[in-house]
Length: 135
Ligand SMILES: [Fe+2]
Image (tube, rainbow, N blue to C red):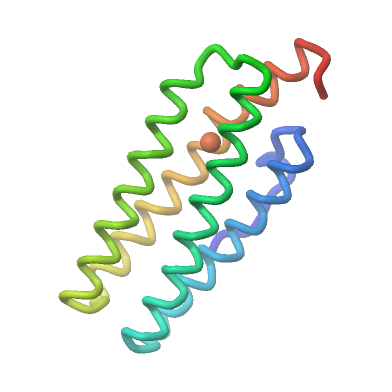
């Protein structure tokens, strides 16, 4: 389980709120896996996580485009890669179910990716918007 920390805030309210919601959705998915809730329930929480992730990335990308963020292309690629890995994960759970091993592996992969993306890449958006007096 991930607990939200103040240090994850990038200083852009809209994005920070979405990140917190993303952590809630990720926790719900991890929880369903850990408790071995059954494939349907696990797939349902993963679908919520995927939909919310796509929606959140879109809104972050809109912000970057709106303010001509210089590292948009790289950032967008990170988002696209992550969505692709979530889709792969869905396919693998659909085919093989969520074993304890997959669960632990994905727990680490998703969590590490998200927290490192927020604290490195998203943080830079916050800095850029502050430097340019946008937030
Ligand atoms: Fe991002």
